[in-house]
Structure formats: structure tokens, C-alpha cells
Length: 147
Image (tube, rainbow, N blue to C red; front, side):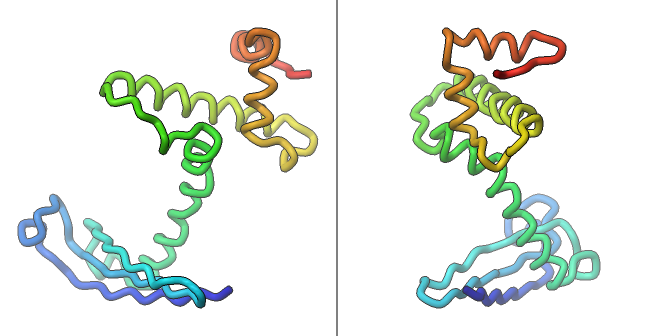
């Protein structure tokens, strides 16, 4: 399904919009058949000469790689969006631990013969077996192996 994106940009003064270092803002409208139009605001510290509209559209599209990568793993597999921890320190520690889990998963996945068949959920299941013995071995050994 095709998507139409319209970007309207204009130079701004940081003081006028209350956003430090802002040099340019934009309104991006995404349109897809069968869906409600989505409009988002964008701000950058780059001038229109440094970041043209086409470059901005390309950069915005590439930003979704983050959403589809680790952020999706945090949201879907680790239930990050449903987290009810409210302590600042607790959130910091939990966030670091979740990102470490994703890093370990990526390391593990890169060593698999058929990585597309191994998800973060598969990794969590393997780590949860045998009272986390495999997880400790994976973290502490020089050449970790999961069998």
C-alpha cells in the first residue's frame, strides 16, 4: 500500500517556539488509503540550507529503523509500555537491564544458524530454563554457547 507524505518546513527562532537551538520546524502529513491521515510536528537545529525537505523526509523514514529494531523489542517482548514502575531509579535500572537483555539477544541471535527463526521470546525461554544457569554461563564465559 502506497503512502503519501507531505512536508511543509519553515525557519524558526528558538526563542519564538520555546525550543532551545531550534532553527527549522516542519509539519509532516502521512496519508494512506484506508487510514486516517497522521500529522506530526518536527523540529531541528539545522537550517533549511543544511537540511532540505527531501533530506528531512529521508531522515524521518530512516528513524523508523530504531522503532522497528530495539524499541519494538522493548515494547512487544519486554512489555516496556505496560511498565508501572514510577521510581526514577527503578526506571533507570529496569531500562538498563532491558537494554542489556536486548544486547545479549542480538549477540546470541547473530551466532544462530537460522537467526530469523529465533526471536527475543525464544531467547528469554532459553535463558529461563535451569534456574538461569544458561544465562549466567552466557554472561560469564569467554566463549558462551547455548545448546
